[in-house]
Length: 341
Image (tube, rainbow, N blue to C red):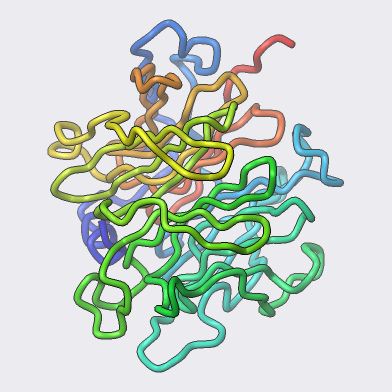
């Protein structure tokens, strides 16, 4: 779904209130395996609201210790070209302006960053809609600045559409999606150069490989814990679903298959498949119609977290005690149950 369409859909949803997001039955347990992570009476918490369209939540751990509960959250507000910071116990503040539209060329949009990642060096990596590239912020996290180093902005000398979301492997390879959502007129935008929407592999040596050019609206992307499976969310309004691929050690894919279908749910609930977060249990939190879906590694639906509004993305706190959710104009949080060591 294009950002324009998402915002139009979002306008049909009543404004959020704290009472709304804390209403009962926001967690639907469908399989007992979900009970190791989710309490059926857990309440969704409203952490911030008033944004245009929130995306790209990223947990920044304190002192680089990835499994700690200490740290803060970054998230994008795409139309406003801003990244915000949420500090637990303190609230939300502006982290970076001009997050994705800093070096505009004629015909580019003014949209900001979408997905956000940390690379192996602890640098902020941004999927920039306006600048149509994947870039590294050329500044320390504690002194953010709108200076960027391009990682990739073209395939075979043609500009990318608008890089959307990505995931790093443990070896430092990057897998990312490139739908046209950041282009002002989407698929029909006159500035579009590629004739397809791609799923890509960027090796740690900066070699770009096209993995799949036959996906309409590739969006969120994730790796299984053993890095043998690549998951891609497909936010196609006509056929919303999630895909899975077998992933080889050289970064190539095979055995493309349906992971889970969302067509029936999308007919009745707001939102489409989008961002994902993989838990240390192997279970996958995936945003989709109605909120966030919890899957097993093999695509079985275990539970749903109902936000009642278009929901873009999610991520886990470092200690996996909280699931942070970007949903339309808001930042939400859901406490999770901690697994025993």
